[in-house]
Image (cartoon, rainbow, N blue to C red):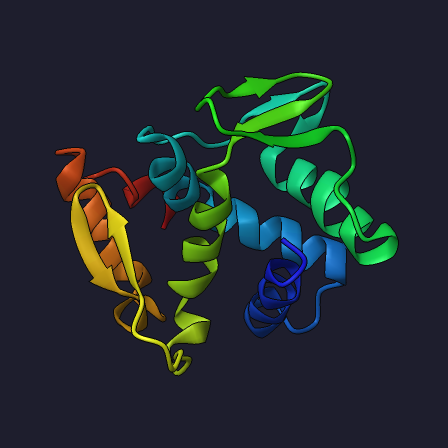
Length: 159
């Protein structure tokens, strides 16, 4: 996660160069929330909040900020290997959210010209994608997820 948050901020800054760090990160995660939740859980989940804390706010407030300032996650954000999703005072997310957050950043159009030198593959819903195929491929991934869920309008409301 330590390496993830600078990439997230850089991408969010490309999308919203005039916004402050917190605003741009929260808004970017909100933009990508459908992609992230679909990959992480196999369910399209958006606009979830508990006690006024939304998913983008939890990632920023309990993830990015404490890692940037303290070098560790806030105890209110946890990742588990059981696949459980628990939202309350503690946001206990399946560990699958970690690669899903990464993919959410990779596919952003702002990253279309990025690449990695190592030939890696990422499996999404039973299909292998070369990592370099995903950079900037947001429209392709949205279409792929929509086709996988058999919901052609899945991302239409987010346009």
